[in-house]
Amino acid sequence: MHSHLTAGILVRVAFSCLLAVCIFTPHARADQPAGIKKVLVLFPSEGWSAPSHRAVYNGMKAILDQSLRQDVILLGDILDVSFATGETEQRRLADFFRAKYAGENIDVVVPVTRPLLEFILRYRDIMFPGIPIVFCMHSAHELHRLDRASDVTGVAITVDIGGTIDLARNLQPGLRRIAVVAGTALVDRSLTSLAREIFKKDFQGQLEWIDLTGLHLHELLERVSQLPDSTAILFLNLQQDGSGRPYVPAEAMQLVSKSANAPLYNLIDTALGYGSMGGRLTTIEAYGREAAVIVLRVLSGEKASSIEPVVMSDSPPMFDWRELKRWKIDESALPRGSIIRFRETSLWEVYRWWAIGAFSFICLQTLLIAQLMNNLNKRKRLEEETSRFRQQLAHVSRVSTVGELGQNLAHEINQPLAAILTNAEAAKQLLAGEPPDLKEASEALDDIMADNKRAQEVIRRIRNLVKNTPPAHTRIDLSRLTAEAIRVIQTDAAAKGVAIDLDLESVLPPVLGDPVQLQQVALNLIVNAMEAVSQNQFPPRLVTVKTGRDGEGSVCLWVSDTGAGVERQSAERLFEPFFTTKPQGLGLGLSISRSIVEAHGGSLSAASNIDKGASFCCRLPAVETGTPQHTIGDPNHVS
Image (tube, rainbow, N blue to C red; front, side, top):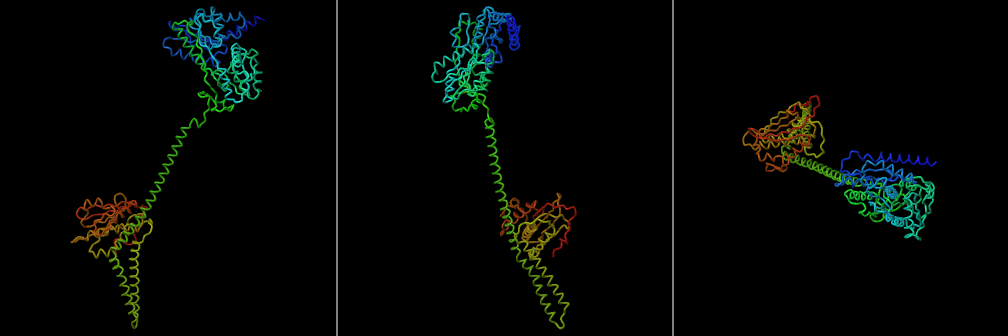
């Protein structure tokens, strides 16, 4: 039976060592040049699966990689002493490691935790004879038992059990019980003994001690699920339960936390995140860094026995944000300077400044758009007011023009009225004769009707000019519209001795516009030309009016005169409002005419003639219809 047990142990030892070789030894090379040092770090049975061991290794590696004084190769291996209970098994394990590292020329050995240090010191002559030892994570309260005469130093670990219990009391007002969880391994029992001493010294009579140490795991899980109110769980360590089954402490703590009905506190930072709410936690990576510093001193030639072991005692308050939420612990109750890990940030916390920036940008953009819309509305109202004002000015200009032509218009109206009166008297006499001359009387009545229509047409033209109605765009024959404008001023032109030469094209495409406004433009240009030539002392007093197309497809009205022309200085201001060269002029005619033409999509320009006088050109866009637009009657005939 004993031989079978020994064989089983050897198999486990071989497997453990093979696993260590696969994990750690890639850092070593057999052909290392002289001057390069080798440091062997030995971990307990959990090996790389324990978060605390990874933290120690990473801390050491970070310091050794930064070293400029030494070139160091860091080796790692697992020394599982938990199953080597007898002297024979322990010697075989020691022989195995001696053979394994016989040709490696190890310069420093770093055992992690007290059990490994004690094992190596017991079998040092077999395993690593004459090699300095720098331990890591040895219990500080048992450091006095260590014999350092044999070239041994290192870093001792402290855990703040009392500070963690005080922290639990502050976070859980009314706390009355502490349930202590620990296993049966050597480290577990050591921590349990230390916790009992601290509890008896500082908390006896204040809190109740609930002993959950040395239990089978399934029993432990059942007990923590039925704890009384006002209880906190203090998880010390659990490498091995009461049945002798080994566990990774962090994984065992996670199982306990899931079953517990009370908050769980622990002592080292690497276990945070496995169900513990936190506590005054020892920072394990710092121990690895400090051990590496001592290793470098030994590699530089110092004796390990001459280096005083370092006892680290920094245990900041650290918490798992998720467990705080689980047990409804307010963050404001935490001590000042607390470290909170695993915080789950909300979308607002992650993108808060982005959201604020985007919202601010949207608000600013909205304000700008609102301001632009307000400006556009103001501009639209101003344009509408300007349009109304321009229409009123145009109306004033037309009335002014009609006023200037009033005498001649009255003469033109009086002619048909006088003819009507004469024909009426003649018809009366013809009907009073014996016998009455009915034929002559009928002809007289026909003349009366014709003269009446003539008078009505003159009045219609005047009313169209002076009425103030909103613009109504229709298709317009520019030649016919110009002919009607000339009929209005024909009598005035004759009275001033002005000859009007017409060259109106009979076939023109229509233009789209308001007939009253466009007739005002034509009338204004022709009247200005008449006034210009009427100042001539000698003939010719000639105004030429012409319609037609230009080379760009527009329909044009040209008005030329043989007057004095336009001076260069005056030409630059000719279309400005209230600028005039007439003694009694308002200076609005040409300005209004240009605004009317431009509102119709056209242009109005002026130029001096080469020989004498000035010319004005009104261009309007043509409306192409596919078939030519013919005028009714001859526009060149003016009655």
